[in-house]
Image (cartoon, rainbow, N blue to C red; front, side):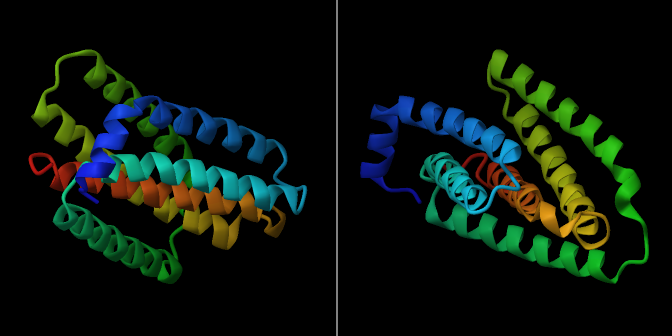
Length: 182
């Protein structure tokens, strides 16, 4: 959380943040490729989690403890509520996939546009709200797919899908809450 020495380290070694994200994507690609080769897949999942954790930890270090705790509790509560909803629902959520995929690309492009132009707090918060809703829907979709459609052999991909949904929901929520409190 907000800690001056950590913040100074992150500012001084910004390249580590970018290396961690590059390594996150590389480890994710290799993990997808080797997902059925045990125990290599577990080792790759561990590497992916470590690189992802460094990147998320870097982002979280810029916010106050209060904001991080609030974002964590909200994310936890939303996740539990969505899981309970999905487990008890009789609805077939498998049809959501194409719509979520398109919405994800819209959010990605909108985020890139936000980075290319001067920072606008309202735009950033709007993208974060849409992202929170999108990844909430992804939690429902991926949970449903794990319960009803995904083969037990694909547990690594299912784990990564749900992990990324929760992490992205947390990042969106922390951006909404911490918009002015850094």
